[in-house]
Length: 182
Image 1 (cartoon, one colour):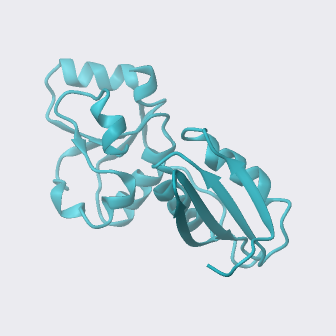
Image 2 (cartoon, helix red, strand yellow):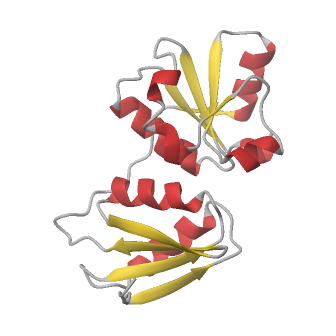
């Protein structure tokens, strides 16, 4: 690729949500229209960057993979293009979720982490659809059930909950703080 970013951010070795946290901070120093290259090793960061950029109005340009490093390119939006970052309105804490599961309520738990994260620990009977694949797999989720979306910390699940709500899912809750405290 014959392209040079205006700024390079090293987020290698960091796990969700840190690549996004660092990107949010670094992008404030860029001029509108300038491009930041975020170098990350977290495989879930591609979906995170894309969803975050979309939710804020910044433009996700793409990702280039070089060995174990993912180079994400994001163009900073102008003031007119920028959207205020939103959060999904309906949240549930882990204890409430645990009570629902133990009470055998009819709910669906959607885990939007990457398959490797899911393999190393998940809530029994949770459906695993990574955030980056969610848009193509909406049809696998029952719109009529209470849907509890979880990730590692609550950030990816927040973006997923917003996407689901926009697609007509009415009973969506973001689980905070996420599976890391399960």
